[in-house]
Length: 296
Image 1 (cartoon, rainbow, N blue to C red):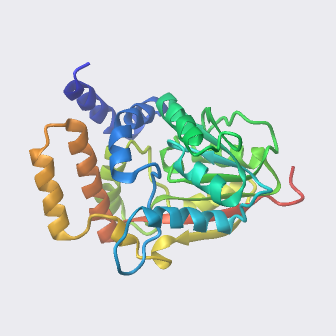
Image 2: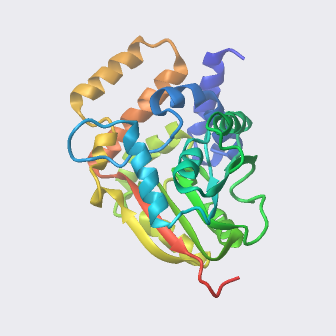
């Protein structure tokens, strides 16, 4: 299929929340792999940014370290990374903690890249990757000490089912931990339509939840929520997004100059994120929830 037609059809399917199905999300991520690797390397998530000084890939690794430390991930742990992308975080965290990692992705192309990454890092004995669905985790009850998500749950059509599945596969005393894109809790309907809808339609996201909604869904699944933090309170979140007028103008110029429809889509998506972040409508949340020692 001609790329222009293929991307046009994808954009059309992404325009409505009812048509942002698992297949659409999967198609989007297959097409975007080269661009994500160009922009983000092997770690497809926001960094933990300082107030000043240059920012770069080291701040994505810092985010992973903070998330792992909050869950107490160490060499005794079996960890499941749901929505693992091409394996960057799982391999990095396995390398620094000694934990055993399983990564799950619904995307066959990502799966092969992740397995190749583990081999390159000589971690294939401690990191494995599987193909599967977050709503039906292909693992036995009480298989893991930690379930991890890094900006993946926002793409899941049914986060309630994911949290229920996470509770099922965790051992007693296990931890659900991660960070994800969120809408601000106090948006009006008009602001949600103005700022959040464009993000969802350009990033293949069924709908952005709020910090309160995530915490409530975790509790409904049986978890004790220990941390549900708006990362704007912990770091300089805006530094990770295109909010400066000069930077926005540069990206707009690059969009006009590009003949690649997918590159233009991603650039427009980045502009939507920056606008929403600057307006306070969009944020990133960090979560830690526990499965009680007495739960089975």
